[in-house]
Amino acid sequence: MMHECNVKVRFSETDALGHVNNTSYFIYLEEARVEYFKQFDPHCDIKDWKYVVVSIKCDFINQAFFDQQLRILSRVSHVGTKSFKIEHLIVDAHSNQHIAKGEAVIVYFNFETQQSEVIPDQLRLELEKELVV
Image (cartoon, rainbow, N blue to C red; front, side):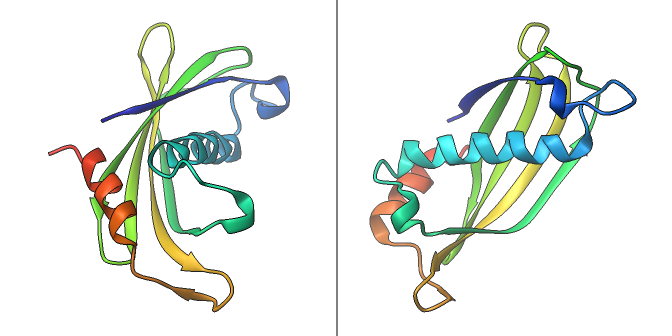
């Protein structure tokens, strides 16, 4: 199942060349990821945060510009023992033109012990429901 998150490009996210600066895409992906987490972990709270990004990448396909409406489509693409992968696609909200694609590997993490942990069964079930086969 795809999760959708909409973003309107702010002026501060553009650079001297007039397009969205490459660092801004990682902020968009983070916003989409956090919103997506709430879908399969409704008790997702910063006081009890259990997720660490251990790898992230973004491939830039087309430029985006100030005031452009973007849609970030996210889906779980892999579930491991202690980690899972989320794939993202950023498209123009009106034309559906592909702007960028990315992925993030997330580890289930205990901040008290500073150790990764096995994904709990209930969360694993929710993540596996999201897998697109």
